[in-house]
Length: 228
Image 1 (cartoon, rainbow, N blue to C red):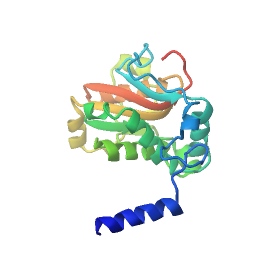
Image 2 (image 1 turned 180 degrees about the horizontal axis):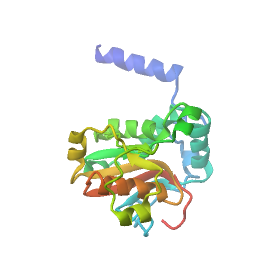
Image 3 (image 1 turned 90 degrees about the vertical axis):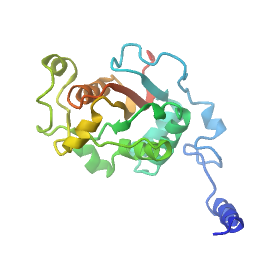
Image 4 (image 1 turned 135 degrees about the vertical axis):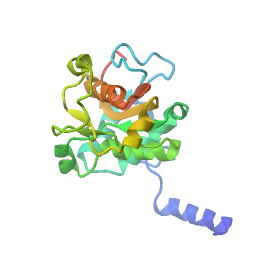
């Protein structure tokens, strides 16, 4: 298509379907408009994001789980607006775009079967799908909700007692070559909301002790905690 026609279609597209803020739905070229952004408490990129909560590596978060961010998450997870996953993925990628080239793979925390049945989609997968698309870092679907099966038998006894509740397991259908590729790799595990940190610690334990990952960092969209 000639370039001038492409520009014409782009202009008409914006007229017929103008970009809107994902929170207030007012016109905005950005995912979150300046008015809503003033109410968002974002993380400081250069601060220590560990604080002992996630002992495996760095812990990144985009914003505090309050105000517009809490409203956005509610629309996404409980309002059936699956398309917001792409927007949240864009927000996370653009804020931490310099971080993603540090990793070989992205792994996400899967939803339970009950949540999947209720919502009809996996909110973390929709987020990381967009992050992967923009960053070029491939997704590996390694972790699953534990149904009593999975590659968990090789966990060291200390790790099982300290970090693993049995809620998650490494997927039993993962090809051996994928597990081999993970050995010595640097992985970023992504979740939507951070509360106690137990989910991230459990998944990280599986990635380190079963998959042999050399480094596992974590990233979430929002947290209500004030100690990180």
